[in-house]
Length: 466
Image 1 (tube, rainbow, N blue to C red):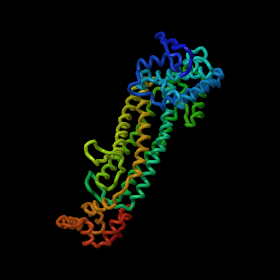
Image 2: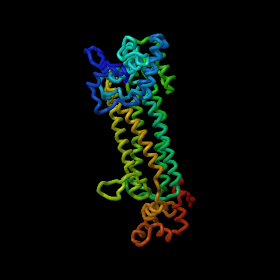
Image 3: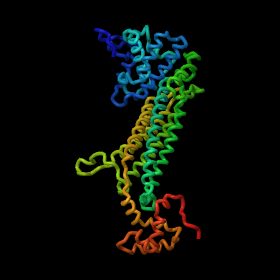
Image 4: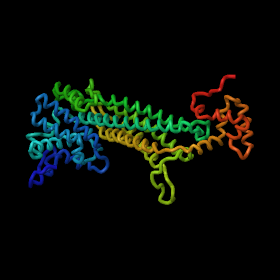
C-alpha cells in the first residue's frame, strides 16, 4: 500500500459505473468487481501464476518501450513494478478466487491495475493517476487476457517442472542408494499378495528406482511442450490490435528475460484455441503420481511384513498407545490421488474450449499448477523418508527360509518333479525351516550357493548345462 495522505478513497469507473477504491490501494475498479464476484474463499490465485504474470507483463512493457509505444520513464517504472510482482511483492493484491469466469480476465486486469499504480508510486504519483499510466492503455498495451494468461501459466509451469525434475532426480538417487545398501539381503518376492520366489531387497528397490528414472526423463523432456507460447496473438490469435514488430519482439523479450527457451507459436490461433499441451504434460505428471502411489503402497507392505523398518514420524493413534503409522507414505499416496484427479480436470477443461479461446483456463491452471507443486512436495518428502528406511535382514531371511516359493530356485538343479516331491516331504515334516530341510537333502553348499545374493541378483541361473 502507498501513503496518499488524508484522502481515504478514490473513485474509479468502468462500463458498469463508479466504484470507490481505498486511496492507497494498488488494485482498482476491475479488481473490485472481481472481489465482489469471486470472493477468495476456496481457491487462491496460484502464486507461481502471479509471479509469472509479472514476468510476462515485463516482457510486454519492455517491447513496447523499445518500439516507442511507451515513454522511457513509463517503461522503466513498469519494468521495475513487474520485477517486484515476479518476486512476490503483490501476492496479497489478488484477493479473489482463482476459480473465476472470463478465461482469467480478473487476474489479468488485477495485474494491470497493480502494476499501473505501483509504477505511479515509483514515479512519485498517486494511485489512480491513470492519465500518466493507465492499466489498459499502457500496462495492457497490445495484449489480451487470452495471450497473457496462458503464457503466464506456461512460464509458471516450466519453472515448476524444472523444480520437479530436480526433486525426482533426488528421489531416484535416494532409492538407488537403498538398492545398493540392501543388495545382499535375500528375501521372498510376491505375486498377487502370495509368496513367490526368492529375491533380494536391493532388487526390489531397484524396481522403484528404475520407475522413478523414467519419471525423471519424462518430467525433464516434457518441458518443451510448454515452451511454445501464444504471446502476441492478442484476443483470438490473429494479433489484432498489435503491431507486427511488437508481436515478434515480445516473445523474444520473454525468452531472453526468463532464460526458459520460450518461443512464439507459428500458429498463434492454434496456440490460443487449443490447450492440449497442458493435457500432454499433465499425463506425464499422472504417470509420476502413479509410480509414487505404487512405491508407497509397496513400502507400507514391506514395513508391515517386517522386512523393512520405516522411520517413526509421530504417534499414530489417539486411543492405541505405542502405535506408529506410515503417515508420510500415506500423505504421498494422497498427493498422487489428487494429481490423478487434477489430470482429469485438465483434460476436461481443455476439451471444453470453444472456437478461438479456452474459457476454462482458470480451472485448468489451478489443477495443473497444483499438481506440479504437490508433486514437488511429494518427491522431496518421500526422498527424505526413504533415507531413514532400514532393512531387517534376519526377518527377510526368516520369511524366505519358511516360504514354499523358495523351492523354485532349485528347479534348474533338480527339476520340477523332484522339487514337488521335496515340497510334499517338507509339508509333512515339522520342526525345521525349508532352508535347513533342503540343506539336509541337497547339501548345505548347494543351498547356500543357490540362495546367494549374487545368484539371486543375476539375470538367469548360473547352472551349467547337463
